[in-house]
Length: 259
Image (cartoon, rainbow, N blue to C red; front, side, top):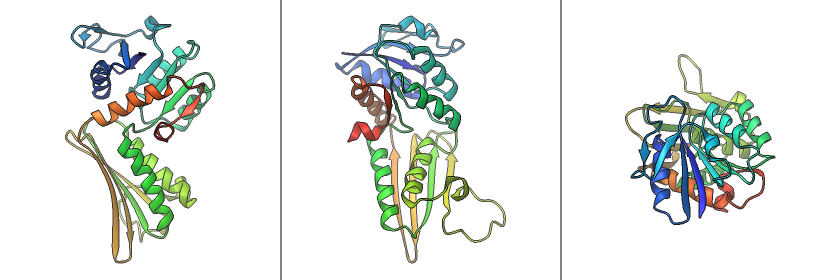
């Protein structure tokens, strides 16, 4: 069995990963981590089998893979804590990293295997490929990306929306700094041919919807993924944990898992 620690154990994603992982014979859940001032600290979960802890160091030499769905700052702290743990691997589903923070993750991946993905679902990763293929096939169409999430999501646009824009931008050799437009307001003038519009909607309990619109003359193509349950992401994270458990140091993504 693969021994796993889950950081963000009381969050929406962490709780589902723990619940689904506890029912899978491939995994042994050895730790659930939360911040030191979290109200759930010390609480027993999974029918009393696990206690939420605040000190990651309690699990040194007791686990093989850490799954992290927390915040950029917390994730980096966790990575720095485990960077010299023998054979430790990490699956990161946290979003909202700055370019500097991403560089730090890249640096730490020289010491251990890290899988970083803004979205763990198989369907979303298929959407990434489809969006790139569409951009290649119809490069002259106007492109807009719309994402919708629950009202508690802190970062915007979503990591998945950024990933979609990045795939398209890379295919079309465009420039994120000049061509990405985050919403529009006022008299902005006619749409520029190379613009990629990115729009974030927040409300209710929406798990996550993403649509890429390719609009041409007389037609419009829409590629959409709608998540009805966080289980799609949790199962993907567990699949990633199994995949990375025997990998050498390096930075990986869900694309590597699904190849």
